[in-house]
Each structure stands twice: as C-alpha cells, then as structure tokens.
Length: 114
Image 1 (cartoon, rainbow, N blue to C red):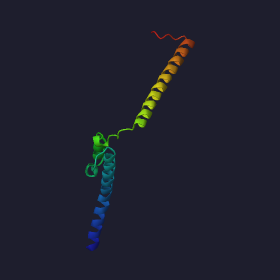
Image 2: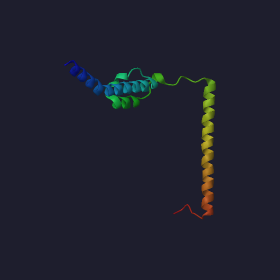
Image 3: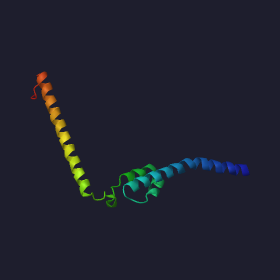
C-alpha cells in the first residue's frame, strides 16, 4: 500500500513537473521583458498564461518612466551629426544607384518609357 501511494505521488510529480518548469520559464521571460519596457512585475502573467502571457507583455508599449534620459548638449550634437551623416550617406547611395541604372540603360539601349 505504501509503495502504491509512493508510485502515485511520483506519477503526479512526473506529470506536472514539466508544466511547472514551463510556467516558471514563461514567468521569468515575461518579467524580464516587462522590466526592459519599464514595468514591474508581470511574472504571474507569464506563469499562468504561458506563451499568451509572454506575447501580451511583449506587446505592451514602453512605459513613459522608461523613456531615455535627456541628453547632454554634447550628446545631442553627436546625435545630430550622426543623423546628418546617415542622411548624406543614403543620398549618395541613391545618387550612385541612379547613375549606375542610367549607365546600364544606356549600354543596353533600354528606354524608361513603355
């Protein structure tokens, strides 16, 4: 009788252990995602709702409290320089591609009109 009870307990543990491990994993993942987005908690959302809870937390907008801190004047200048360089690089790339396209059309006598 004691072995029968022990076997039943072992069967219950073996049956529910994977579900419990998945629940803990989803809870931890949802908590980490929420923390990155500026929220606290949300462990239990992932724990009880599994993948649905993780998807819910992932779809939350960033909290206003987690907004980037204000930049110093130097950081703002660097950011503006980066944006200018990024714009100029894209502009040069488009001009180069347009010139190459025109050259290919010229070589193969392709007209742009149909």
